[in-house]
Amino acid sequence: MKLPRTTTTTGELFWGYFFVTIGSVSFFGFVFAIIASTLFPLSQNPLNQGLKNERYYYCFLVPLTIPVITVAVYFHWLSMKLFKHA
Image (cartoon, rainbow, N blue to C red; front, side):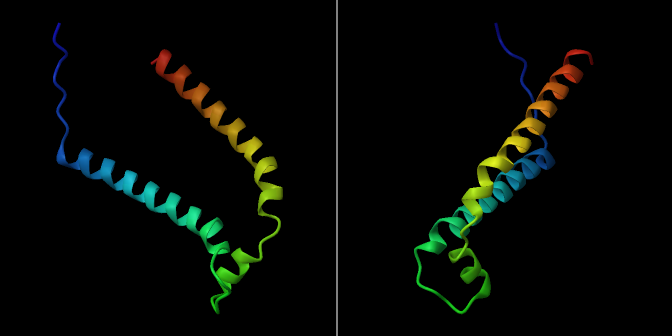
């Protein structure tokens, strides 16, 4: 049994690569800001100083993750309902 061949346009490929690139840059940028910046010595940049001296990030990380996961699960459920009844 052969599957039907799907065709993708240039625009779809562009937007796909665009979103993957933006997501990857954001992820690695935030990882650098939170983890790697604490390993460097103090600098004159106020943003780096603020990230290095941050004490409350991990205190708020877990409690704020719970509502975000709840909303994500709701949207997943909603999208599956819409897909099932479309």
